[in-house]
Image 1: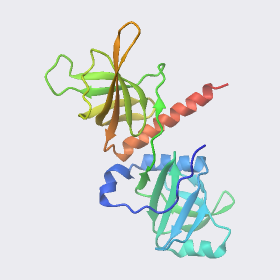
Image 2 (image 1 turned 90 degrees about the vertical axis):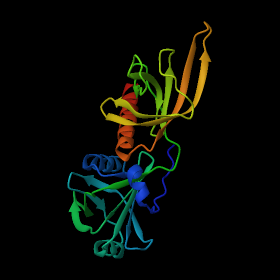
Image 3 (image 1 turned 135 degrees about the vertical axis):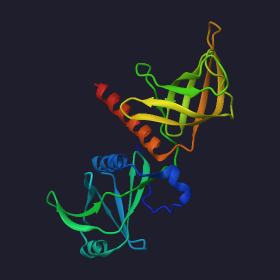
Image 4 (image 1 turned 90 degrees about the horizontal axis):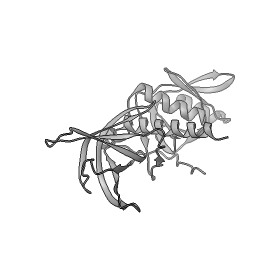
Length: 252
């Protein structure tokens, strides 16, 4: 059972922009559409107070979004006349937040609604352990690690056992690059089917050597993503969601 995400307003600084702020219009629309599809709770704050209404996202398109109005007339009046609004919800167990300057009172598919223009940016802030997806052997992923020192191979493609927005688990053979715990490996590339390509730095956090009954050794490395940007996190979340949907579709 998924836990409810707190809908309290988060205070962001300029340091949060690179990691938590998303500016891609396509990705913003994708996140908000998913919130609408899941009928996730939305808190809409008005002004510089703690006053808010709990509502749902009725619809999203490339221009804006529609939120259901409150049963309370005074609350709706406060929202409609406010020059500062804060939208807080969740997407795949991750808090989503953005600000708006104005909400228009409209009717959307027969419902009294508030219309907000599509924001220029949104914040996604995760304060919990990342969901880790075991990569199916039938649809393998590989982490392509560049080699800076002169070598026969300029890159190494290492099989990914599991993946999350926090990092990857790698299975290394004898011919693969020698991964060292504590070391960082920049410009690693992972191609995510039907989602996109991410490029970032991984840091090796642990390395385990397993020996089979036949005496064959295999190394497994637990790696953490370092300062992965917001767009890459969205792509990873999209990949995980696509894989979960595909698994459910195969279940009788």
